[in-house]
Length: 366
Image (cartoon, rainbow, N blue to C red; front, side):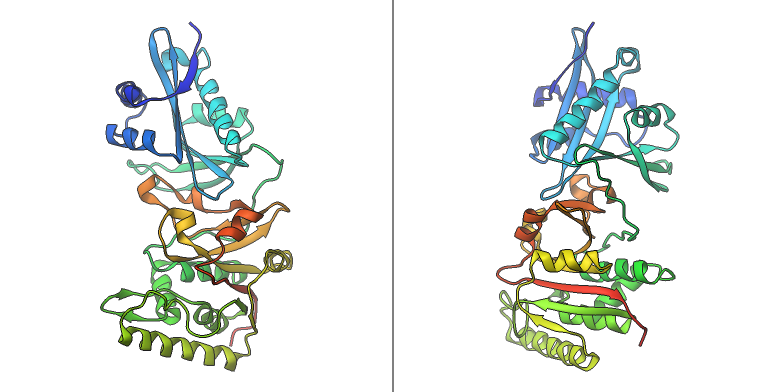
């Protein structure tokens, strides 16, 4: 019997759960997860069926503003996969990613799943990494990627580090830059919090604060990197929503101190909105650029957020985003080396009316 593939519907949940239970012994998607993902506009679920019923499915996740799609799950019952259900589902997943203008399709697979690995390798997927202790039973995962359009791989030598708490995106960008320019530097969670403490604007009982460009540039300089600041706003930053007069005063004092240190260190400051060409020239010269973006446009939260620009392929900026949306099923593969179209990136690269960037490079330790 031929295999047909169509979009899954809410009425397919029983069949999807049955396929999941027959295909996997660990890391199974629950009925609730299927229901949630079927309703999400950043996920596509396709089901394979014969006249006898459903025989397989695949699920692809899409991150907003990104050129990457992720094959989150794929399963085909062994009794029917001899007819190519697995291959057809993989083809359909690639087409779904292509139809959403994605450049790359990425995935993880158990290192001991030789059958699936062979399928991916036959279909021109290349291995891009290994994640130890990835699955519930401790098994490692291999990461694969396939170029769907453009013919250019998004390789990078800049290590990726995921932020461990909500407010350390800036320090994580600094750690990734330090690990790149200083090979002996090893990022860890203790250093993440230490850098945040050194670069943050404030810490009070109302909660932790974020990092602004002057504090991060000063800390980068103190850690041995060169730094340049491009910022469109004079004076203290991120005070728009601060209602407490005491908190405003402390933030203003902290930022005044950062500005004095930047001036003492001779760090260049250019008061203007950076351009796309500024970022492209910097990465072409071997620099990395920490850029302020709107969290709302990336993951739906109205917060300032820092990402690290690594490279430029002519049409896209390649970005490490330290934030991984675990609640939405994301993994590091969704946030590392993301190709973002130039115009999309520049549209999200501001918070309110402010644009800010820190250009980092090799420097001499002070």
